[in-house]
Image (cartoon, rainbow, N blue to C red; front, side):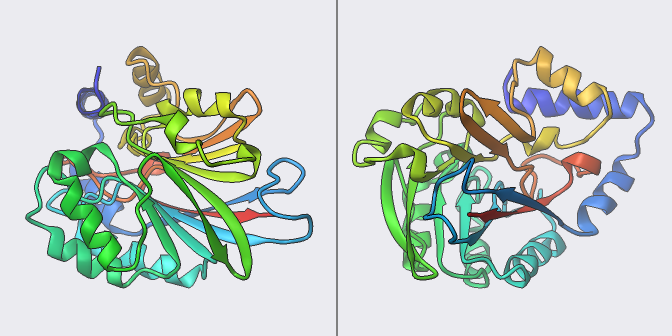
Length: 273
């Protein structure tokens, strides 16, 4: 079952339980929750002992008719208010076309810097070369099965970007080819399923998105549908061997559906060190 079918089934379950779609959309438009996470040095040796960085993550923006202008504004404002040392974007900026790329560009311009990105499946369906070009024109490097070292708040941070696995563009070997110490790298990968491959490299932390947390959280039902659909990593933290995976619920929607509860729009903030 693909993600769209999973979302349809989840939403259908919500209707069966008498959950109001209008109420869900109102919740989605009402704000973006901020989640806070500590990655201590003992567990995540991404930095020298005693050094700290604040990294914020936004994902699954889906600029277009599925994401309200209010949600976009709120996410943008909150990303600035949390004052990250680095903002990471993990894909799905548009839906199925480039028709909203100017709106996306305007939104991107209001985000804090430095910022770095990877692409998602919807970006490839919409026009990945144009999206990548726009992001890089706005000063946001895009990692595609490659790594880089950024100077963030006066200290070097190795970042690995693994391409989207949902569209079978992930090449973990290529992404880590020039990474001498994977355990010290922050890894970005849109599709959380790719984390099973990434764990074999010795990496210690991966930030992903893609699932929307199930889009609509119905206690007991959403998780059951996800399990039946073969979705192992739905939202939040997971341990894969010695590696931690975080699945961010994302901001927007590619379907006519709102957000609620544990699947509501999310800006994740990580205190590293």
